[in-house]
Length: 86
Image 1: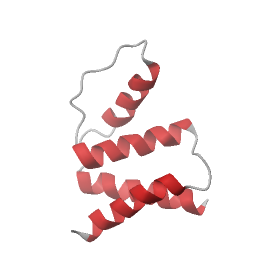
Image 2 (image 1 turned 120 degrees about the vertical axis):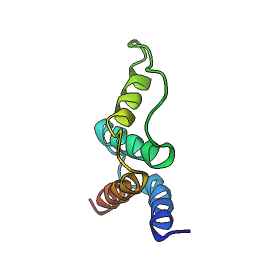
Image 3 (image 1 turned 180 degrees about the vertical axis):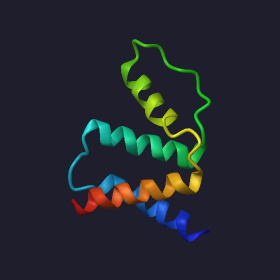
Image 4 (image 1 turned 90 degrees about the horizontal axis):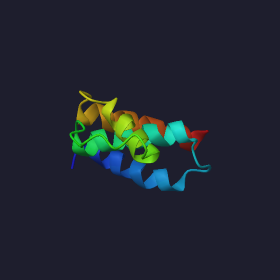
């Protein structure tokens, strides 16, 4: 297992132990980076306009299109670390 993968998995575990619940835009950023890191570019069908939550998640993931898995993992790690230290 690479060092980056180990740090990503640690950040994933730490994301459940944050001292405070992040605001919704931050949660969407976490979600988008996680999906990009683990699944790559979004190829899912765009949710209906009326499904606000699914649409926000879809948009959060799609905005990271083209970001490499390693870059997404590093950004995810950095974000979780910053939230832990806040």
